[in-house]
Image 1 (cartoon, rainbow, N blue to C red):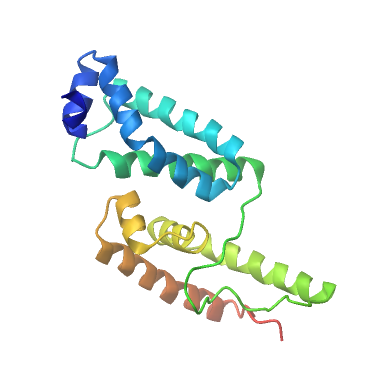
Image 2 (cartoon, rainbow, N blue to C red; image 1 turned 60 degrees about the horizontal axis):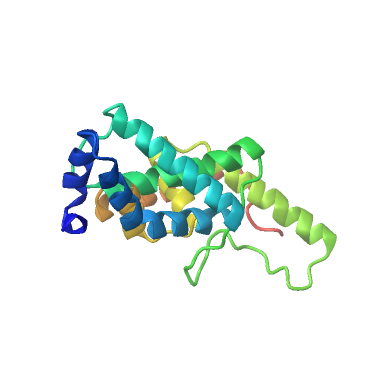
Length: 194
């Protein structure tokens, strides 16, 4: 039965001209890819558009021979979906902020339960400063921080998406935190409201 073929076998069949092989791949992975996109954009219509764009790009890259088979087809697609979702926000200049799942969140510095406008402005400035200093990190560290803090991904999901081991993802986060502390110290940035 064709649905029992591995992703690698289906990719080879698709590259050999078997369009149905790609349909099987799409059916196999569509829920996971759509869920990831919708988790990032939090808008089902936009998620549907980005989902279609993702698979159009996947088809193009497969046809151009730009996918190197390493048995990591799903992480490859998830990375494309992630990048397309983030690119959408970059184009529209409205990156959402999502709180970490961690009990202690280094980025959650203010309780805005009954905050005054002044407190909200200070909190906005702190988040702006945090985003700015994250932009100063090396690309691999910046990517892990954004996936963890903004996309709320586990380190396993980060490792799968970026195609590295969990230890490498953890190491990048560790170095990112060290570098963030260094940047904050060197620039005398105040990340607490008072």
